[in-house]
Amino acid sequence: MCRSKKQYIKIKESKKHVHETKKQNMVLSDAGMKYKDKIKLLEETNEILEDRAKSLHVVLESQREQNVNNEDLVQIALNEAKLSEYKVKCECHRVQEENARLKKKKEQALTNYITQLNRIELESECEGQNEGGGESDELANGEVGGDQSAKVKIRIKQLMDISRV
Image 1 (cartoon, rainbow, N blue to C red):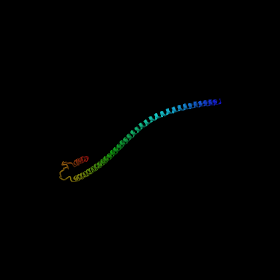
Image 2: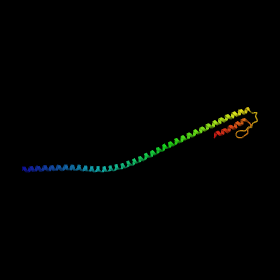
Image 3: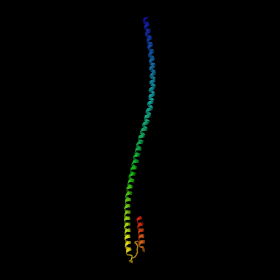
Image 4: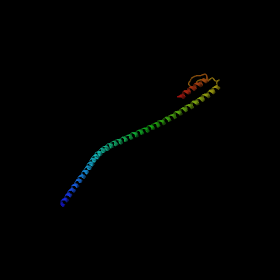
């Protein structure tokens, strides 16, 4: 009986051990299932993230190309602005030169005008002193005048008309 009792105890212990092992296997199996579910979920999430990364990469490349195009457009606009500025400066310089030529012409005309007025004044003074002579009172334009003052006024008017041109 001793032997049978020992066997009985061993069988009981073995059953207990088998029961505990089955219990641990079930716990591990449950944990494994949970991990398996988590792995499946992580794989699905990873696929979604990879698709999103590919999509973002395409968008990024498109944006880079757009930026290059925009930079080219900006550079073109800057070049056009510089060209326009250069043209304006050239035109301004040309206008300044033209103004200087016109100013010089006006100064020459005014100098001629003043010189002629001085000559007329001298002629008027000389003729005033020589009023006794029988000379013809013919103006530069061929008109005949009697009054020296009127001659001077007409000549001044003619010179003023010339200076306006």
